Image (cartoon, rainbow, N blue to C red; front, side):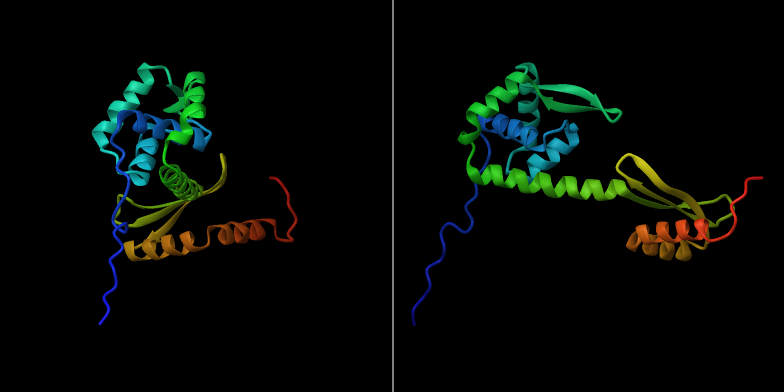
Length: 192
């Protein structure tokens, strides 16, 4: 009986542990996203995409700030990281020193993370209790920075609120269109 050789490369991955490589990966992440991102988002992408140690990552982000390769900017009511001119020059010069697999993992992780964050920011639904042991569904639909729909609906029981939340999350745009249709229906529009 012939035995198959085990693939010796199947469990091998690149551990990001050299300080300069960690810094280049951080700079690459900021370059790839093309917009300022929060400390938490940057760390999430880096930890998801690489096998970097969290403490090493934090220390190297601080070094990049001290070396003026990244800066803190205030966007969307919070502090975020952005590349400086010297940071951009550095990653442009040394980007190829990062393994292509590290660059690819960073791109995949950033794309997936920000796609999920964008979807979460578009539709929001929360169940909130009232003072009388009844529940409400607070629902919101946004298109970028524009609020399209915001409402609080009496649900009665918690079970009804959960059911309403699930239905809203399945088809928020359809509900919005139905509300618009109802409000714009044929009737005469008069202001009192």
